[in-house]
Image 1 (cartoon, rainbow, N blue to C red):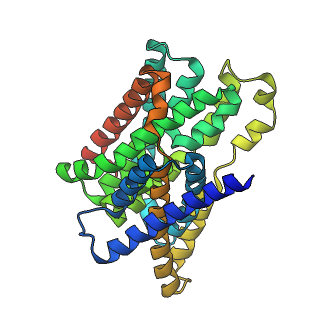
Image 2: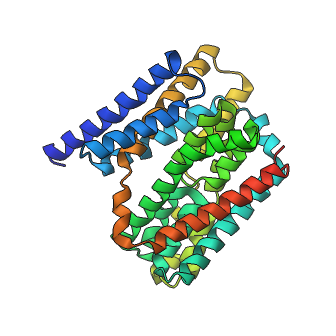
Length: 333
């Protein structure tokens, strides 16, 4: 890494931290309660990213490194009772969402004549766990760099829109915190966007959304194995080799979140530590959302045309609709 690259990365990190911590300070003092701090951090990042040429890869790295830590810290404020209360119906809804998201994305991609590999990236990114799924499946199906970039941009744009649109829509529909958390946990794409959308509604909604999203993430390994075994784009060595064994691993922050929830439920941690972890988690989520804004480049999508964009829109719309209908019908209540 040369000095220019290091300097650019430091500038992006400084910008994300400044926006995140500045928003955190404002949320504790002058921001009215009806203005979600995560929305302010996201919009500030988007605005700065559009005005100043910052390295989006460096901003994405901040998201990748900071979000898992924030998720584990959130686990300290979540009890095992909250996880248990979601129940079998919510788990079934997660599975149904996976089926709907994958089915719609792959079907629309075929109808729109979107290249198979790009359609697969969009399907897994929408239905499973956003950019993590895209990056994980890309080497298995030998996706090209531009296909990966377009899929990531699509997921980022729709997820960013969800952070802005879902909370006011949830209030209009009269969703309670649990209903909204389940809807956001299933209907929004990437983990960072799910966390931000949930906490933009309320702390309880944010905790619920995080739990539901981590359940979705846990299916990633099984789905990657299926892709490796069934996809015509997968190379033969990947069907039986190390990639499949690695794909079975659940992301470490899922286990970290569960361990933190167990510790919090046992009541063995000092109250000051739990309180400090809550503040740290809120501040870190805001830094991550600022980085999401800084890394978002909607113009990057124009080079691939409109058809893949339609695939992502159709998949997310159908997934969100299924989840919303289910929570309105009483799932998770």
